[in-house]
Length: 205
Image (tube, rainbow, N blue to C red):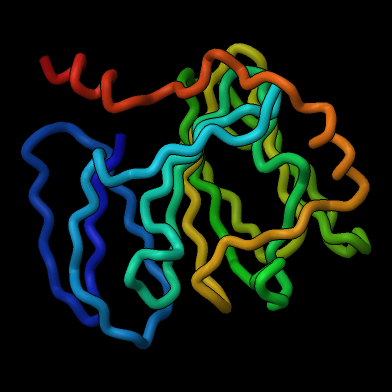
């Protein structure tokens, strides 16, 4: 489970790592000044989203309720063979409360070096229509459009999601062609959650 440190605009800082770790720096333009805040693993809200082979774990780090100007951060764990960001959704139009305009990045980690994910990014008019093979340590920019992901069979796919845009909301609209899929969902994938506070405690003991 993650730690995060929110720092206000115009803050100077230095970081010293006392153990091996992964650090991610997530920035966006901001004009509002908000207080610094440490986000601990126990502060992170876990959501199990979807069902069947579209079940995934969402760890909400900087949520819409968090006192910041634009930045939103979640991380997503997708089990082997499962789909994520599915049904395909988008958030590129400011039309609250149903949808807000957010730019977004997906930064990928995959549990084995030969593993990969497939990500599609497309707009309703197919002006943008790309299918990407994404490997460990790579990043995808989502400027607009729908953006589903599938994890290659045999590999757990993680991505760090940083978003910012027109409102402190993660409201999105689904691709209407795939809305019917939600009605077929029944049981959650029993492999999820993939990471819990209990696992964190066992590793530290």
